[in-house]
Length: 349
Image: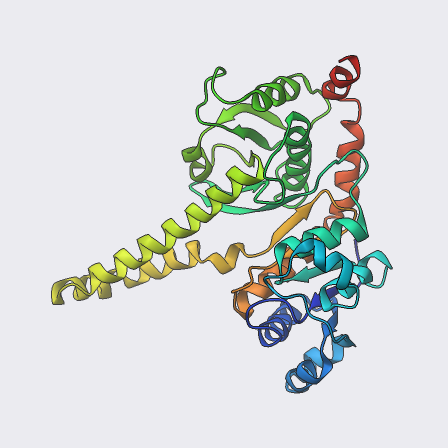
């Protein structure tokens, strides 16, 4: 996709909205001068912030709406009563063609429910999935699903493999991505029936552009042995929350260790350049921006508690997807897998 892009922002979504959203948009504006913004939310709160950023004001338009989706709102209730919320109006802008993609730091469940209702899924995809990046020893990998589908059958896992490999090819620029099914062991006898069936289908798939590794284990995620890790939403959400918690734990242990003595403090001063490099490599803001894959439109979920830099990175994810024409690439991948072995087996049974 070339030319100017328009990103719809849910300006009222997130723990520190609209301040973080507007500041993040201003950072993104500097990185991506080809992007215009539609800011959906309460104008009385947005306007004073926008007026302080004259260059952002030139490429941003406020669309006033009174209603806001709260973090504790139930998705089912939001579907019924949130039609005039900033989140819903931002999603509608994509459906109506006024925006090319939407970014929100608001309620994840509500964002997924409304996005699926408004934008629908791509042909052949039963359920959309949440995906995000992981830092690894070899660079970056991505995992899906991270919480949208707590229980999945073999067909869902195969769909996630199609979506994940399409993402890796178009956005991560990996011509033939490696992918694996997350399991409790790499042996073929390990795991439940859905994993076994999905593995059999993926081994037989000839139209999927990627190299299937079979089962992978939890420690393979950070090793970078696979470009794409496929799992159900329950396991994926536990894995990513565990990784985030471990990173915070290690950071706290290091902080305490360097404060434990004067000698340790001197050691910190000597090691500070390397520690700063490590901090940047593991900075969660760098990986902010979960993608809702399988939808007929670009939807990116920013972490609710992120800062302006993290929100700008989430906007960057949306821009990357659009510039790589991700929806059409994924549509083509889904079309190629339309007659995958799973469909034939299901019909026969």
